[in-house]
Image (cartoon, rainbow over all chains, first blue to last red; front, side, top):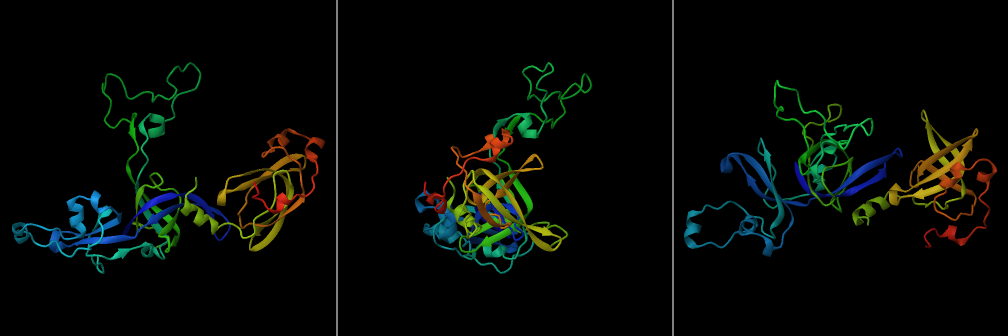
Length: 231
Length: 127
């Protein structure tokens, strides 16, 4: 299961043994189930969940239609099959679809998903979009070592060095790591320890760092492959 | 600026009995040490050189001379490992970080002058 949330920031807390644990706060959910796709209706199983509200005046007709039936002309109403139950209420700011290989039983349109889902879970996967670093050099982007600070090196202390051979092959191999746009990548961090959850404030304390800026959108999910030692 | 939510979470992990001391004080830090399965209290005595950070990340540095060698330990203020902290002597200071003491040897380190106990120590957040 997934939950959409926002990264609040990092801090440090003490565990039972008095060790300082670095944790990231994620305000996750509540998310509403907006629509359920099934093998019969769409050819695959999925849940559409929405997070946060969006003012009606900012929402497109499609976004409003996702939560409530729109008024249509008589002809289009006749031709259009109903898309199924709608949740009602305000449109969601963030809508994501979660695919399932099997029918995710026990869900209904309008259900509210909260951090309760993660009660008792030891690990989580977190998906986020990393901070954009613009056009970055090869040292920052690919962890190259750069060149020496002295011993005759001039004006290329952070340069990448050689990119290939000579006449043969006479070209640079595809995939050669060079400078370029860095960041704004979707990154999944797997099997982060779940330190604790706060149901009242919809907070999750996750051990370690997660991608993205504070306030950035993140997805927290059940671990896809939990560590074998503990399930 | 610290986020409100972070602050709320941190308050849960702050010690119920805030440590009262200032930079320049000579303190006894009673820390819990786990030896095998037994818990023991070890005392580290020295001068507080610095106090930095805020919330659960606040730490302080204590310096002492062991066998002619300067030893500094950095403790998290809110560590549950600190059982007790006693102020042995107050030192008079004119700055917040006493790193200059590292260069001093012998008598120059020993006394930063005494000072009568002020009310300020009782209420740490007066200014």
